[in-house]
Image (tube, rainbow, N blue to C red; front, top):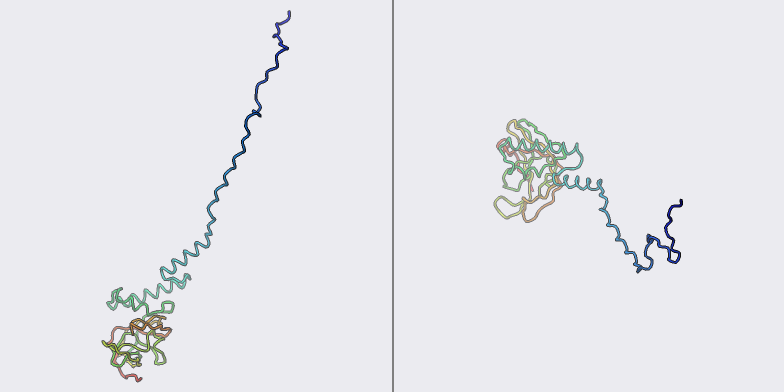
Length: 216
């Protein structure tokens, strides 16, 4: 017995499921894709590190040479301790520190009675606290202007080299004069001093007597 077969309608077109695109629909141009956003620039970490080191060195007065910076710090501590031992406050002795080249040795030294030292002063001026170990030196090498205002006047005068002598054993600070802009000798005429000479510092003026006046 044959199974019943579906009736075939030969007069009707075959029907197919529509799976292909509708080619009769309106064609649309594809929209351009936006260009990708550029990424962040690559950081030059080596350059950034160098700039930071330079900034910190300038801020804290460092040279960038570790061993040299350690030496400078130690020299500053020696000078600070000396001034503080003499009763100076940091505010008081800070300007004096500017006259010391801390890249060179700074030491405490005890000198005996009878030691000759030299100091540049204007005629009739007050005794200072900075001395030279030799007369063969120029004011600029000691960080000062060859000229200065006379004490409590507006008159300029040339400094002369006076000779002092220690009267008893005394401890002094030994250092090298720094290159500095001397603003105190003649305030209206700042003077670029070259520094470089060895110097002794002592505020104990009573332990150094004047034994000879310099000549112009």
